Length: 340
Ligand code: BMA
Image 1 (cartoon, rainbow, N blue to C red):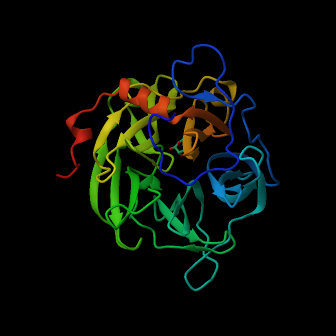
Image 2 (cartoon, rainbow, N blue to C red):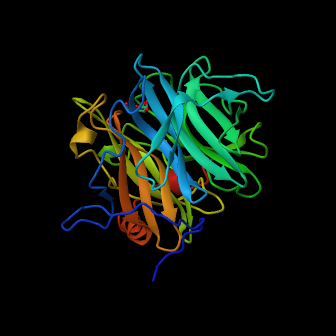
C-alpha cells in the first residue's frame, strides 16, 4: 500500500533497481551500473551530463547536454527503450523560429523537458547578451519551435511545472549573474501564454545548512503528490577546494507553490562515487529530471555527475517524502507567499 498518492501518467517499463543492503543515510540509492552515459558518446561530443528525460509512447525520450570537443554545449535528442541505454542523435536539435526558419542558440546547456497538456517544452540556458533562459516547444520531436525567451538576463535553472496552476503556466528559475555565480535563490513566475510572465514570487533562499549555503537552483520538474509538489533541486557549498553540488528535496504547496511546506535540512544525494567526485568539474551531482510511476510510487532521478556523465538514482516516493518531513526545517522566508 502506498502511503501517499502521486498524480502522474503510469509508466509501463519503469527503470528500477532495488535498494542495496546497508545504511544509505538518505532515501536514495544509485544504480549499480552508473554512469549510464560514458564519455565520448557520439562523434564530436566529449561529455554528456545535466540532461532531462521523460516517457514517450511506451519508451523514453530525452534532451541531452552535449559538450562538443570545442567545449561549447548544445542540446541533442536521445531515445531509449528502457530509460537506461540511450541512443543519442549525432546532430544537434534543429531549433526553428515561428516561421520555420533555423534559429539556433549560440550555445545551450542544462536542458529540462516537461510535458504540459499536449505539448513538450524544452527549457535551457543560453546566451541572450548574458546567461538567460531559452525555451522551445514540440509535439512530435521532429519540429522544435523556439519561443520568446521568458526573462532578460541573468537567469538559469528554469523548469516548468507539469501542469498549469490556477490557469497559468508556472516556471521555477534562478536569477543571478553571468558567470560561475556564487549566489542565487529559487523564484517562481506565472504566464497565461508562455509569452508574458509575471506574478513573480520568491520560493526559497540559499544559506541554510552548509551543503546549500552558497546557491540553489531548480532541478527536475516538480512531481504532483497528495502532500504537495515534490521538488528535487541542487544546492551548492563553497569549500576551500571549490564548489560541491548536492541534490536537495522540498515539498511545495499544491495551489500556491511559492510556499514551501517542507524542506529537507540534509542533502538527498551528495558526490561520493568516482564518477561524481572526479571529472571535468569534480564534486557535482546535478538533477534535471525524474521518471516516476504512480502505481508503485517509484522515482528514478537523472542527474549530471562531475560535468562528465549521466547518473541514475532511485527512491520510493513515500520514503522520500517521510525523510523530507522528518528532516524538515523551514523559515518564514520559505513558508510565506514570497511577495515583497
Ligand atoms: C553550474 C552550471 C552547471 C554545472 C555546474 C557545475 O553553474 O553551469 O551546468 O553542472 O555549474 O560546473
